[in-house]
Image (cartoon, rainbow, N blue to C red; front, side):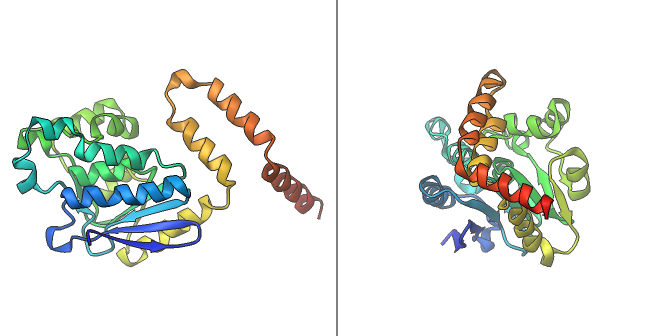
Length: 245
């Protein structure tokens, strides 16, 4: 199987599993996450997406398959559709990256809300050197993460970014020196996220990802929904009780 899935009460842990191909993203690996997304859309939970700690996240698309794709394949949005679906999942997602995340592999990590990587992680968009564009999200997600000018430089040159630079420019949230600690750190971040109200998390993600024209109306409606939520009342009551105690 191209994916390994671990079920937890509040999250799914999805591990890319094509070690012989350095987790290169082929048609099979694109199809499998649709099932994962369908589950998380029906029953929202947090998502941890990783390539494990074997020194590779995803070394881009499977070039042998990509070479034979035609214009109709491009218009079918084979990769970008699943990455957009991951991006739109109801609850926060974290990518844990050890080693190279290149081309489509990097774009897969950008589709997640947050990224944690090891010191040996590498990011890059080599598409122009292969005669194509980064067509699965990098042209709009990368500028949002690192700014337009820096994103254009990386997309135009195909230059690779190491973990230290990725942290400095805001491409990742944290760097873990020891690969053995990567998944623990990612779960720790998800543990912190899971302390929040599920509905508040959903509406916060929806608001952050909404286009500027949706604000402030979306914020006002979201807050109105939350102000009537019983969990909000209970959480605030608990907070006040702890402060009095």
